[in-house]
Length: 238
Image (cartoon, rainbow, N blue to C red; front, side, top):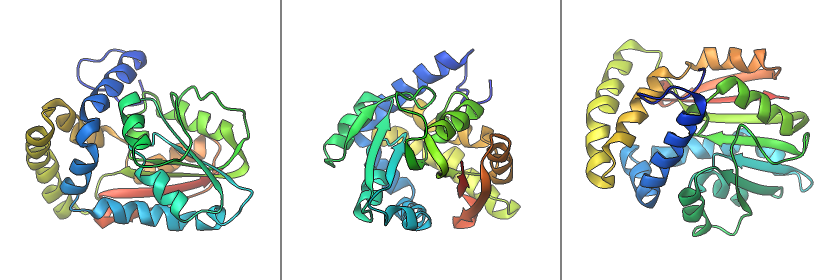
């Protein structure tokens, strides 16, 4: 299985169900924990992602899909800077409920691996901190490419592995020891915040993800490390 693999999970269907249930449990305090555990740096990461696709957002005729939107933070940031039409989707109903309380953007519930969308229908697809949780990364890249117009852009903002060994050691201590303890105390869902660092460790590093995008048919693939490589922003064209 080339995708999210929570402990004890045997196949992609079980993995997707586990991830959906886990995010449903943390949805009520998801925003608070995101901002607290990242010291609000997550807002800057999203702002950088928005800036990277501003040329598309400036087009009134452009259509934008924010996938795995969670509580809507990136979708809202995109819309705030956009003349384009922005819609957002997630497969976790409690997350969409939280998003609906924050924005009037069109929202719909769907699985990123089986989108109920016409092929070649979007100029931009964005995914922030959700691609890592897909049950199959290659299938996800293929499905996102399907809904992109020829020449359309995919932007993936995701946790990564810091390339500097010294910083990586400090970050790993925080993510493996501190983050799960705080997350569990504030959310009551220890399993969710144990899964987070485990999923990051299993996720392809930035160069590997770039190669996966190229293998899936994306062109002009680029990436940049943010905050010493804690996060990476990848872009590519369909």
